[in-house]
Image (cartoon, rainbow over the protein chains, first blue to last red):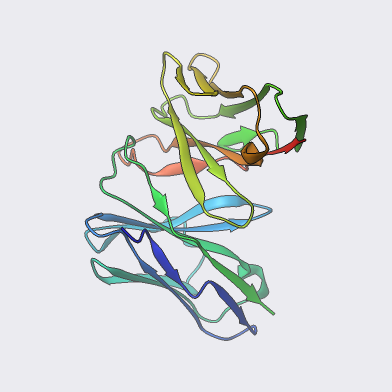
Length: 115
Length: 112
């Protein structure tokens, strides 16, 4: 299995621009998670989906952030407009179930820099 | 108070040393506990789950003290390849048991 795939791996953009991050979960996994990691705040859960439906978006920082999962094999996280404080590494993860005993598998991350 | 707290380190130890990391969590209703490992500029990966009775996986031993809300990870006979950040992870209590809360991580540097 290819694991969780994310693109792009690096993104540098200017403040005010729209940024779209992409994720392909592991085939057969019903849960998809978006995380953000910064030095200050560590790894934070932004939103997660079950069978393509958003379940908990309480971690999404503000209205500039939106996430979609149009099908079982693809999800996007969009930031519009982007701001310098959005600079972080964004990870996508997937798991078979939401049971705490199930491992979450992380993608390689997208390193976002907003100038 | 943070939900999951760890000493950030760094811990600098020589090869072959034994090193222990500690972690405390704030919500006594959490039921599941893990240690993840994250190499520099890489994604987190599950190292091991932590069970109430304590558990061992080769050179790694994890322990849980529910009364004190305390989790530990012991690494024996440290290898250079153990150098990484170790994340203490607790599940969010309540209905969403698979929702995870990550500590800030403890950095380990094993030196020759």
